[in-house]
Image (cartoon, rainbow over all chains, first blue to last red; front, side):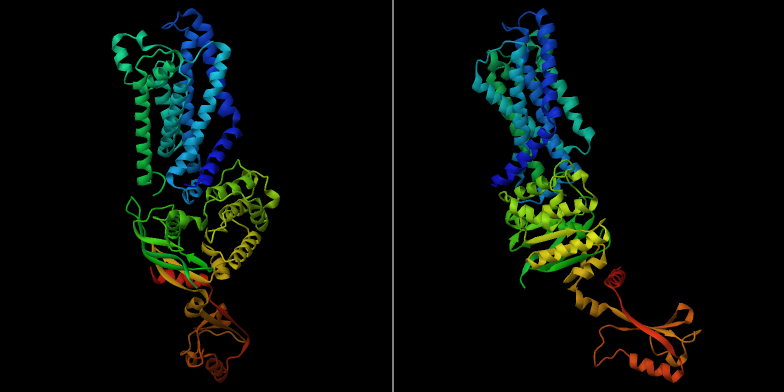
Length: 253
Length: 311
């Protein structure tokens, strides 16, 4: 493996975020903070505790997960889409880098940015609501696995997209609705029995549930099932990326 | 001179069924400047793209310095620098950063001394802190060359390197390319400017409809396929070529004020040009002339006739 090549790609991607710090970092932190203010501080005071946890604290893991998913997908998809769009991808494809080194550079940078943002939001949340973390190592594991998995999904979307509209299509029409309906703001126990079953088809439920368990020890589904589901998504994303490389889909005619 | 690139039976058929390359065999010699000519859509860029790893071949193979471009892509690509046809670059980064980035992508450690040398050689040193979006088209083209040279390649592909570049810059770039060749870099260029190939190339390849129709030393090509013309400016205009001169390949020009004689540029002692005989015949028929000049057909004319012949 050429570490120097991967480091170069990684650093360039991180530098791109720093060049657009308002959009990359400040904007998601502000919008997530607004959720805390509106749902946690304003509305949350009128909602009773959820499974023994104050509503403000209850939504912290879900909001971090919401930000993590959307940012991972958008960072990684834009990261690979932009050189395809501008034509500069020629330089990467004609370099001695292997496909997996290219993925490591792009997905590593996108996941790193999401993790940095996740940490900032985690610290910011503490300004609005008190919370504790029962299982910090599992919290980090959930955070890292989710960031990597959804950055891989973003990478796939960035290769699939043939224009800016498609680039936005999946994050806006799939990721965000699934996240809102994935138990970010509620426990699925609060839903009518029928919808409790339906909502289990939403993969985000498992991510939010497992992540919330690492904070408060409460979950809608077993944390092991959550972990298994994340690993399943990761394996599926890797399989799709491997297929892209084998066929040269949208990269090499 | 050993071959640094060996293309064997290369074929490329795109998913839609379009055959861009058909059984191409080509050997590029180490240290030469090779010009690939061909009309639009002939397969020049596809050929370069396959060698550089941007397009998957459907038949044949490419060896770069002995390394298979697919199985041993790291070794093969590490030796190649590519300047693409399109002016593609990240508008928001500086010249220095983008050239350093290119070096890093090829796994080479940072080397500010080398980057400075490259930027100075391309007259980009003063622009090193400029963002690419602030540069002119010619300067952006130079940046692409600098990026391709950042990792010290042994082989440089230039796909239409001077497209959209003004005459002065073009001549500067020719100097840069010659300098690279003098330092041992093998140059392969495609160009629409035949003048460019005529000026710089050691050998010429002509590609048409995905097939390599000719590969030849430039001077030999011009000798073999070039035509010479002798134009005689007459004292008195003629209405037609006199019958006494009909056995010469003559035509009238300038409304009868000039006689044009075409002959083979490859004339030898045992196969003379026929000029002496023509002049004797002119004297015998009493046709006087006040001036004369000769002209050899350019590479462009040779290229056009080649493409027509194979059409």
